[in-house]
Length: 223
Image (cartoon, rainbow, N blue to C red):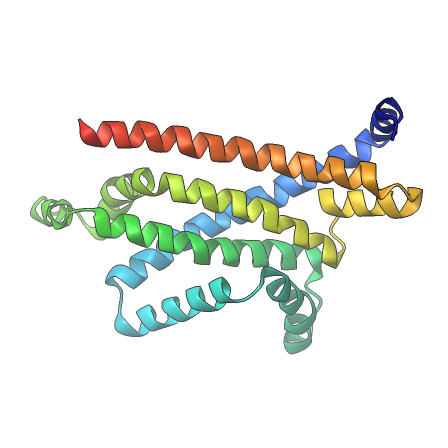
């Protein structure tokens, strides 16, 4: 295969790939924003919520951690509209699936971080007369995020890679664009290899950041 010709071919489709990559980042960002918020709330409920709410939260986490993301996506895209009797669209189904999946996997990271926070922190909040609406976002949340960052970043990489599945419901993400170009040009080697490299570069970069943070975090813990 001629490398120059392959690069020229990819350059001709740079706009389509850029649009797909932008859509991938967009849906990943939405999934992260909603999912991380949900994950923290679920972890708080599982840690110190009402027993009934704890069961509901635990069931939600186990379902979304224990089933393939593709099945979740298909269920929200095909089954939920049939149950509700209304069309939800692939955008809503995509964001909902990624958010709920991210919420489930990140809740375990937050829960582990919450357990590592000493009881004296909560006792101090009570002693100072801080209500829950103040102590949780200003005292508990910052410490939880600091401890959970390494695993949360790994979860971000997982969500970024899983987002390739949204092409199955017609979302024009990077994977969808790559597949369409491959089908229309009959040149899957160049385009799908380039698509895989883009996913790899992003995922590898974030994992390096995770390793760097972990080394720095562990060094601070030893001080």
